[in-house]
Each structure stands twice: as C-alpha cells, then as structure tokens.
Amino acid sequence: MWIIGVNGGKYIGGNIRQLVKRRCPNARWVMDPFHVVQWMNDALDAVRCEEWNAARAAARAARPRPEGKRGRPAKGELPPEEVRALEEEAASIKGSRYAL
Image (tube, rainbow, N blue to C red; front, side, top):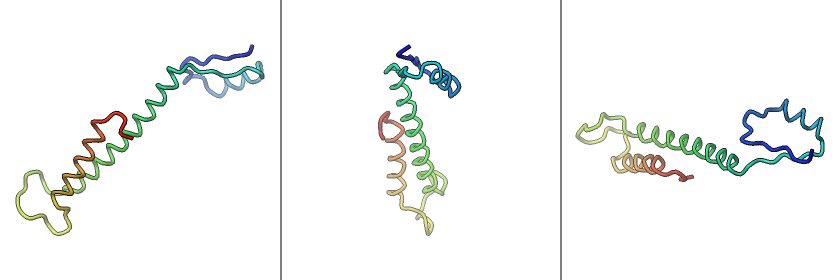
C-alpha cells in the first residue's frame, strides 16, 4: 500500500495512525483539499469570534453608565468619542468574515 487517504479524518486518531505506520510503513498520508480548507475556515472563525468578543467586552467596559444617561461623564470614564470608536471596532469585526 502506497497511499492512505484521509477523507475529513477528524475521527482518525493516534491509534489508527500507529496501526497504519506499523502495517504500512512506506505509505503516505494524503488529505483532500476540501477538508483542509474547511478546517482552516473553522480555525479562522474561532479566532474571529474570540476577537469580536474581546472587542465587544472592551466597548461594554468603557461604557459604565446606563444607555441614554445625560450629563457630563463621571471622573475616570472615557469620553463618548472613544467609547463610540470601541463600539465601531467591535461592529467591524463582527460584520467581516475575514477580518483577521
């Protein structure tokens, strides 16, 4: 046997790999491009979601006052322009598929 095909082999663990290496030491592992791209997109999506959640948390932390409260910001609060910039950053990450 020269080639071992892995069709979306998430279920192929170390035991099967060890068995194949023992029984077919000269065989090459090959994977179909579709699943490789799928795994890359899943990894990219996970990173994008983490970044979006972090940006959203930063925007929420920057706005300690309830929405719509009038008046001058309390001492130590970020100015509304900076809060708005953080919220826009979070929205831009959420809306883009390949922001990273």
